[in-house]
Image (tube, rainbow, N blue to C red; front, side):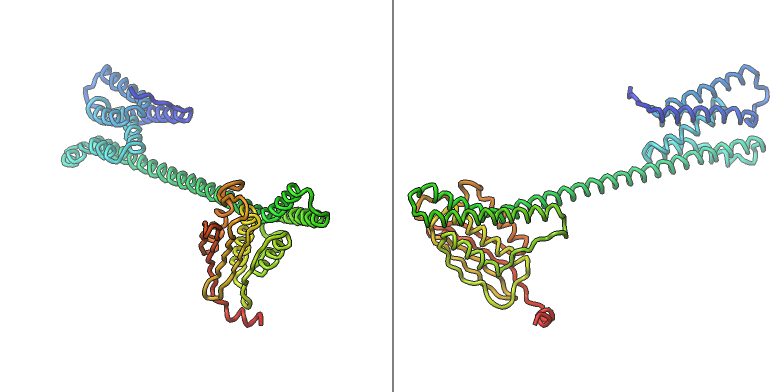
Length: 393
């Protein structure tokens, strides 16, 4: 037997419908036509059957279809006091069961109607009014049940849609948080990786060349101090932007023209770097220039980390309506070499660069080349807007 779990609200609804069926039976008892010659015992039995029918309303959740069919058949053949319970039963079927079950119950309820209409001229006025009222009440109960089911389905649909929208909003928020964290990680890596690599290179030189002349030691110590100062400054700027939030306290972002300054800093730290470009004239969009700067910065950091002492060639070329090409190639290291995918970092810098290039609409390739390592990127450079160029002129 299927177990039905009723909440307090369900019990209240069932008891309320039971009370409705009983009150309806009592209120309509005077209008029920009684056959002539019906003895008091038969009338008492009829009323007891009506009372039991009202009690069966409590079973409407367990066997709604069977209960409705039984009450409809008994109402016409056994007792005249089952109209109230029958209304509750057909209402339950229409409100909770599938359309097919509702149609079968409605067919059982209205099967006698054609025969009754056929014999209508021969039926007395009292019985005629009682029968028509009965069919109207059953039809009204079925209609109200259908309305109740449609309303419940609409509410369930709206609730599911609201839950789906809430889940979708949560997913979008989580995606935005993840993208923000990735952007912060990329920015911290790009900003601090270059400075900290300089610190590592010169600190390592001081560690292994303890007998170096005082001038070289002083120069290396100066580079370490300057790199540490710049790293702290960049860190404060990034943290300040994060604290300020979007649109507040934005620090100046690097552009393509800053590549020359970046190479000059690397040369001052002892790097052998040859720079070709960037091209003179029009400048690319800020996002393209910033991406090119970060690519050069990360490539120089990797060359300094994995191929110390090797010569590095940087080439930046391109033109509007074409594309911007960024290429960084380092020769084999004079000493031991660890590839970009080994050692500290695990190649995450190159992965971040590839993602930056993709977000800018370009592509990036990186890999061994002639014993060294080459990073090559292509970034879109749309044609300059003639109106904007005239305004700048």
